[in-house]
Length: 191
Image 1: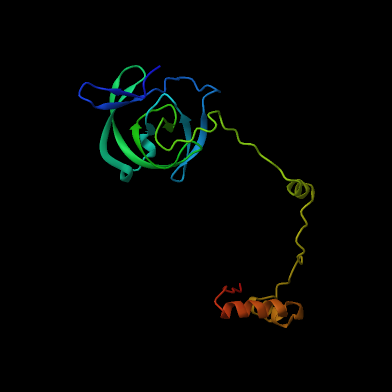
Image 2: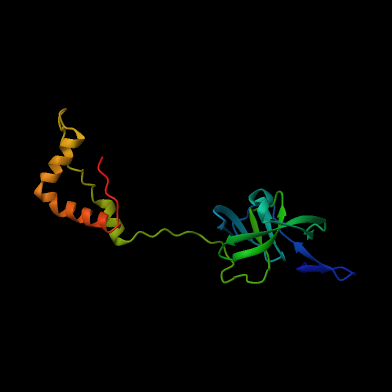
């Protein structure tokens, strides 16, 4: 098993990025998360000691200007730019320093970083639930709105407003709308 970090003779520590899978295996701990307002595929990689993010998903403002030297699973050493990103996943939520790579297998790869949550290290599946009330609503047909077929050609905006003003069944609602408008609670528009 690879170590999470490799310590050089000079004392420098390099993170190990160990995502070696070339096939999207059903047993991989992959889920959907958010990076800003973008939906991203997220892999939890316990053999990795950092967070990896696909470079094209990172805004230039998120780049720190720094670089990190990483050792990949095949032993190659890569110098990668670093960004500070905000993510929301089942494994980690918040701001985190991430190394940017052009073509990782997943949009975000979360390694063993402080603050990680590993309660359930299995694939997360969405489960849709329909409540009894929702099921009953699906059975009920939608009532069509009662409308007059034709108002006639002589009905204008002014005539309609005048007719609504004279309709006693609307008086209560007109008064309430007028009070709300005076109180600044809502605007009333007539079209």
